[in-house]
Image (cartoon, rainbow, N blue to C red):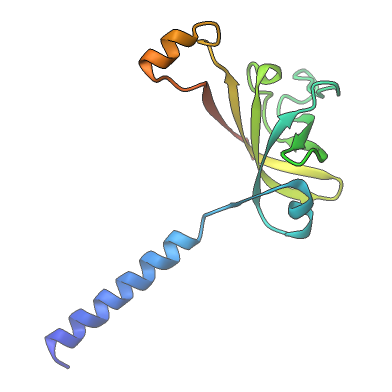
Length: 143
């Protein structure tokens, strides 16, 4: 074989490897109805159902947290997260949970919270500085 053929085959192999690596770990965004239809890990965007109770007892099990959230379409879903309740969880404006449906629960492996902006009462400063409207914080499960 010529050197040019060997180099070409190596480039093709590297390109295939890069493509496979890039497509392996992406999760899709869905609502809870779509998450039930798909039997794989998805990310769901929504907000906390503040009228329903949060279940977290750190003395009994510090790595068990249950809550209910609504997706963007208004569908309510009970969520179980195997980890500690994130600080200021009740104050979050928006949630993104990553996981999958297991029976009647959405089992979250990751929670991303959009916390209220500390600049809410200072709109002029926000416009002048170009700051965002909130802070995103990612919390990983202990599983």
